[in-house]
Length: 152
Image 1 (cartoon, helix red, strand yellow):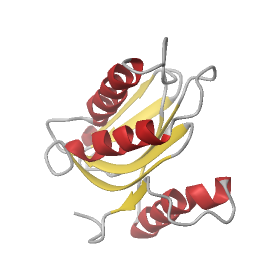
Image 2 (cartoon, one colour; image 1 turned 30 degrees about the horizontal axis):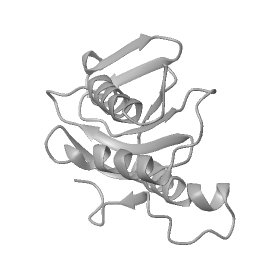
Image 3 (tube, helix red, strand yellow; image 1 turned 120 degrees about the vertical axis):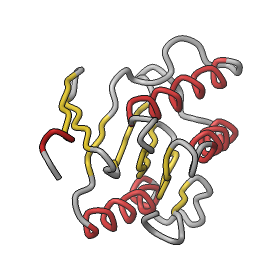
Image 4 (cartoon, one colour; image 1 turned 180 degrees about the vertical axis):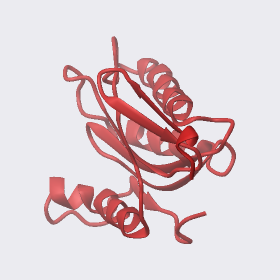
């Protein structure tokens, strides 16, 4: 792939964009926000899956009590920053209709380009294993999901 397809920019963190890449993404609640409730986690899971196959291909996600991880490949017309902005802004709108006020999500998010198949598999395992690392012994966490057919 030619270097002209790589774009790097900075906010608080560096962000690398590569045409056709799959990304591991994480974003967190603001520090003063309370943990996400069961219904809020349901809403976030629904938001993540809403445009799967349309604006992006979603391979795995977990909605934790204070953060979200996703493994996603944006489609050409929807760059990653646009996808994440839509997830965060729509979820903010929904969550503020409940008891939440002020800034919901931290401004910045972490993203990493997936470089190899083993990197992809490692991130899927990390996402699906996140609840058990946080709460040892938990089983059947309903807000962790993985596409069964793997990469698009």
